[in-house]
Image 1 (cartoon, one colour):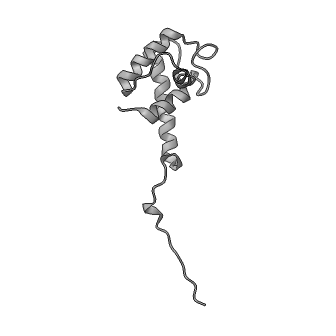
Image 2 (cartoon, helix red, strand yellow):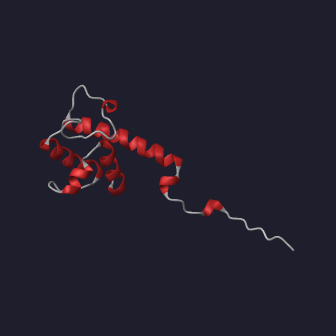
Length: 112
């Protein structure tokens, strides 16, 4: 009985971005950029990007930001990334929960 072999050319298969190793580098780079953006936008003295934990809360017990800081970050997000975020919604609280959630939001919605 003859054996039929099938070959698949994987070069032309569309693989979602999150499967690519370079995307991990891109998200890591974006996360560092977001931390620098927070520091720059809020003029945080004596804070380096390495001082901001990826998953620590930005408000309250974490970085200690307040509602005025959230407004400044919102204006900065619009200027730098072309994003507009409503000021009082549960989604906004989730977006600003940590540096990682903010980076995820920017990656998914940025226009610049």
